[in-house]
Length: 110
Length: 112
Image (cartoon, rainbow over all chains, first blue to last red; front, side, top):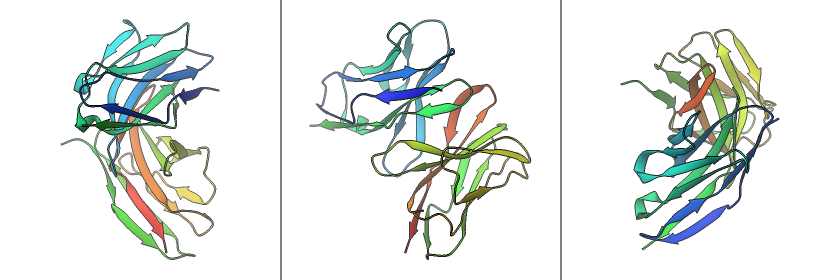
């Protein structure tokens, strides 16, 4: 069975500061990894995905994530956040069936 | 425009009533999913379908039912057997084997 742990339930940060949202996963097989963003009362949108190849993945809105197989992690980073990045972020792992983490609430303060 | 739609956006139900949530996609995806989201929690899988006329239970299927008569449509019925149905319901779709999921805007169900 696969599982996903998002290590921080809430991350407050000031505008223009860097941010890292942490995600660890476990799986017995090769997986695909995803980060999604959810704005209030909306569905999820894909930020970025790791399928294979380069371990550094770039996504939309200036986000990037690094796949670390030895540490089974897929942390999300952004060098400078904006107020508009305030949202819920979900890490997901898939081996054909997706499992989502519990989410991290990112709050960007002015 | 290709996408996935859910209706209604808000739904109110009296205790003891069944209600059906609509989900339609025109992305030609084979797989469709229903998730439940409660405040401060992640997504919990209710049902999923990988092919027309076939579907499987997810982690919290009790009190819910689905059908998949058409590739484009995957309605969810919340029955009176679901004891705590107030939640945000999300429908998603994807291609088989490549599991990036595309989500609808969600339906917020409130039991009065």
